[in-house]
Image (cartoon, one colour):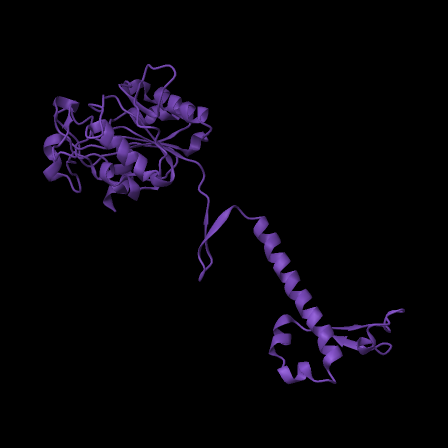
Length: 307
């Protein structure tokens, strides 16, 4: 577009070269038009005054565009550029908490490790396999999820444990130490300090709770949420996710509006109360960031395991 301007300002004694005739037409260029113009046309003596004015206008246009971009970015959620080529942005995840049972969720039935995909018995620093005291006992075996928590969405969340068992013994080479190390490494240090809390401890000393009776797991989970809140980390109820192989425990989480999912649905230990607990433990496909309560029966009926 073009703008009509008047004579040079009164009192401009130092800019005779840029004085303009009355009603002179000044062409305002876009930044791209300015850059595309031949260099000779810009620097000739005849065009120098006009070129100077056009340069100022082009720079002003560029500055306006930059300011608009910055203003738009200020209205968007906090982001970090992860790729300069594509300017891909990763938005900050909402704070979330993943809570896990231990026995037959993060672990596999001790004598089923060879029959369960991606299950494995971890070894301590001395090469020995820790003992798992759950359900009669035997060498500890981690389920697929117990081994690969870092492959789940929970790796971007805080983590905790709510288990009815003891998780066996303390120590870096024992079950408790191994489970904590996996949680802590996968969550980037967001699983507490490695200590474990008896469910009756008041207050809890950590987000890793043991011996919590199955009917009270919702209350124990609420206490873990409160423990994190005491550390300055607050979670909306809809961002708490609980995973347990034991039938019936998931439904209890609706008491506080938490999400819950039964796992190990395809592999059950029918030697215990007609399959009330899992066998191989949780699979990676079962750790889903989905709202609501999902039982094995509902998941199987929906065709989830047919995929």
